[in-house]
Length: 109
Image (cartoon, rainbow, N blue to C red; front, top):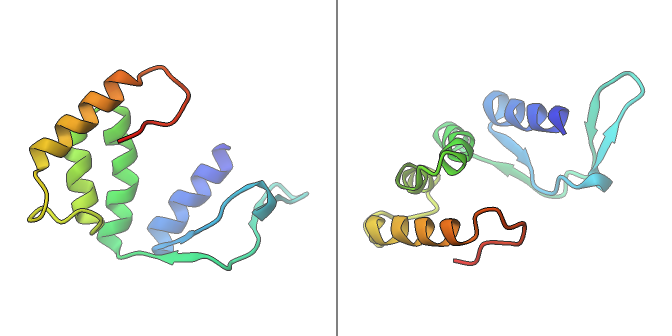
């Protein structure tokens, strides 16, 4: 898992790309201690600012910094801040993540 996380971060920071389907069938641990990605049918290219926002968004979610997370989504061009109420989205995230804290099932927004 640690190796896959490091590989994903390296993909984002070094080449602004992501393997779009990283499951166990598409990852191979080689005998010499490396991780090989297989099946590049889905490859995502992102802009440098989107790559940084994607990485930092994980930290914002873990730290429950939902307002910052929403602005990460704006930087990734997933959310248009002119078309949504940032305060409403932050409130929804806070409500739903608080309600589901500690549960292993998916959070429904």
